[in-house]
Length: 501
Ligand code: SF4
Image (cartoon, rainbow, N blue to C red; front, side, top):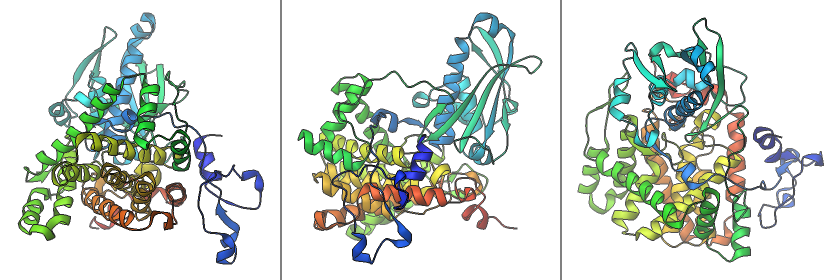
């Protein structure tokens, strides 16, 4: 059973037909059906999924150029993978090759121009990597009439705008963001092809990809319920569980994990600092002006009452930089890259939290992001903006809570509250550009995260009904019910109402 089928069957299912029932994990708290006069329509929650998350903090927190992790960062990584695969083909096969063609489907095709997908693919084919990507080259690649050449496996290939084929939006592939890369002979015969899927947050896979050659996690968990059980059984704090797993799966030292977390913290912090100095128009088909600097100045002038404005300005600063194609961190995506840095910047500069505690907060945020990705999605094209800004807000709330010393139950409550109040939010970027509504949504994600933390730390934690796994299951349910046109196609919601007839 694949992940999609599992999600369809597991999260919310009729009680009748017990073949669908999954083992209930002890510790999950729900409202007794009897107290509500029975189960509504015979439906109820079937318990959190069980499993073992094998993705890591390094997988989750990736650095790359904006504006989109699924439409920009993943395509660079995909093109880079294709380039390396082609370079390793047998010499006689490579000798017949004349050109490379990339065909885009779904949201990649519908909104890829606004998300710079074509430029990202060309950059990857030219040998660029997301973390070190030359953003000036990305800007120059806007001119798709220009022909560039690249050497792959000793063979020269010509690349230009016609390397990319914008195919249909609707398709039957298993993932919303699908692209096929082909190596073609002079007569158009396919020599080698690979079907890739961009699965959100800069992650990707391809049809038939073998399981990665990695270590096994020390602590197995597939949900927040299981993570809490692992913490109780081992007596370890959440951040130690995440650290143990990261080192075991990646085969790296604690120092290497901390180095990556520091790079993430510094990139987020720098994104705010830089964004607060910039003004003027952002790239796009309509006049969209930066506002982070102005809002920050006004908020600072307002004194104590201006805190919400300041927090918003931090998020806007990074989101605007991301829209301009700057390097940012997928947290969990680039569309939502401003929400966590706003909270992180507050921890660093306003609350002056020590670096070690911020790193631990980042690990708590990472746990939330990985559980959301595993049991629902972090892709707007799959489950709407609830999966991007909603998850970012949830991660930011966990960061804020854990870095300031909250125990695991309060951290979970903060993450739960933040995600719950984004449920159902659609993805409707105007013109396929990460401008409206994306930039301001980052500010709202940060403000909601802060509010979620305030509620969680001041309530009695054990009296909080909702838990993270139930809210993630609700997000998956809402995401599956969302029509495709409201999932990053640019053909619904504000993507339509903002355009004049
Ligand atoms: S609307 Fe939300 S999910 Fe969609 S592109 Fe913008 S930030 Fe991402």
